[in-house]
Image (tube, rainbow, N blue to C red; front, side, top):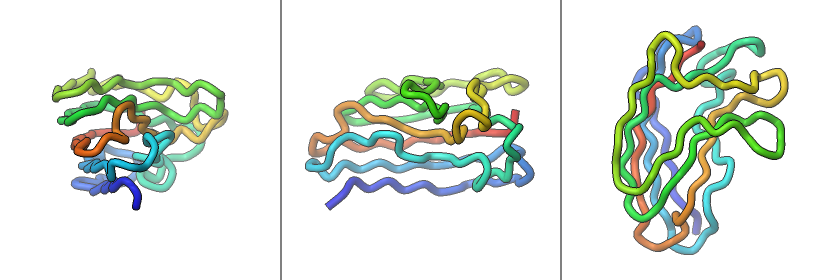
Length: 136
């Protein structure tokens, strides 16, 4: 058995414009933590080119029993942490002109937005994330 991760595109404007995703996470109580689990691929999901960068404009979440980090794949041993998501729930809006940009660029890594979890391997851990991203 494996954890259930369901990513649903709620809005996709195309050409790198604003896209909104709903991510559902349910632990199977047995498997290890999620590590570098793909959330958004800027090239495949938003149609960005290699010189473009992804930015998070808004994130809201509700977690039961675990924490997580969203990070950009930099191609380095330590990725660029974009935002830490603690237990419970919260929502954060970032400047829509800037957002939380991928500082690594797709040229040195993939620029993919990924998630790591902490405490998610426990039975009963579950959560949801609402995420708005765009080309920066």
